[in-house]
Amino acid sequence: AKRADGLYHSYNRVSFPTDDTAQVDHLGPMLEGQVAVLSSGTLDAEESLAVIDALFESDIYRADQATFMLYPARSLPSFLERNRVPDDAAQRIPGLDGPLARLFAAGPDGELHFRADLINANALVEALDGLEVSDTDCDAVIALYEEVFDHDSFTGRSGSMYGYEGLGSVYWHMVAKLLLAVQEAYWSALDDGESADTVGRLGAAYRRIRSGLGFMKDPVAYGAIPTDCYSHTPAHAGAQQPGMTGQVKEEVLTRLGEFGVRVIHGRLTLTPGLIPPDDLFSDRGPAGAAAAQFTICSVPMTLGAGTVDEVTVERIDGTGERRDVLELTEQESRDIFTRSGVISRVEWRVGADTVARWAQTTPASG
Image 1: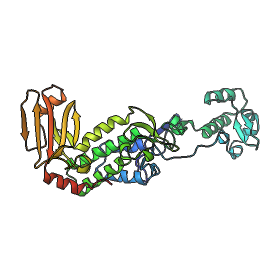
Image 2 (image 1 turned 180 degrees about the vertical axis):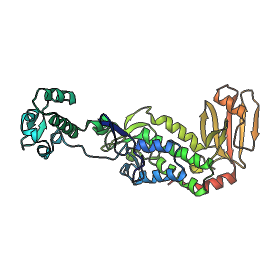
Image 3 (image 1 turned 45 degrees about the horizontal axis):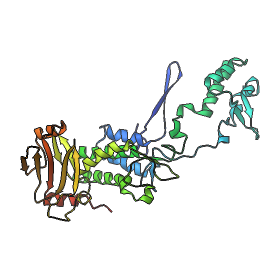
Image 4 (image 1 turned 90 degrees about the vertical axis):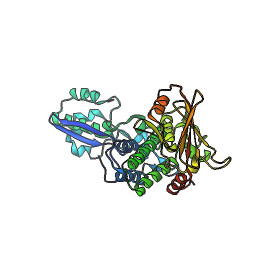
């Protein structure tokens, strides 16, 4: 499915021209296809980076929003340009000037159109059955009909409308899926022991994609309140269709990843480094004060800078435990995942040395 431009084909259509022949054709490039291949687990880190680079160089990228459309923008033919029989059809099908002429209507400029009552291929076949024409001419007219209307390529509103998730639209749920796929590629590269340069470039690619999403924008660019979730942004307006859209669940997953929260061998761990530390917490206020707050399975957690890497687990019975690591035990993790109510709060502290290394690999956001 890999294309010459570095992207991947999203959808393939199979047809059966004859009883013993199958033919595969491609629809155009789609953002969904790139997300699929990035999430497939078949690409290594460098191949993933190549897909991301190709995306930014492609016609799917929409520079005014610094993000990606569902597919490249294209212009639809006007109403009067539709249902027009190619000028060379009469040369290809000599029988068009005979009985087959009853299937067509002439336009003001002499161009041919299929009759308005031939609403689908079945209607066309029924009309052909009433004419005294050869099987060869029948097959040629049916092929011409499909050439004119290209039903096999119809993708519904996405390929025929400009609003909703239509032509020229950014579909924020799919951009969020892309963000999650790139974050997964980042973690895979880290786990596979890829070079610091490769891991760093995947992190930079992630942050570049993140910079084009809602809350990173200002209201003028977004066309709405940036912290609100919206379905899509068409080419002719700002963000549209507010509500708890599909984007939200990917945003929750990616945000936890941005904190560095992961589950490794059944243990909740903290692996900071994907986004700049200043994006999560600062050293303003009391020394080591936590600035980032979040929950996992309803358990409140804080993340802040400290002297050394450490985690403090507080229990509902008033007891607690502090350790110089950035992971919970299997039992503590299980208590959180099962919502047992045993753990009341978790506080993570990232040591000064870790923060310094972290800041070097993730330049502060502009």
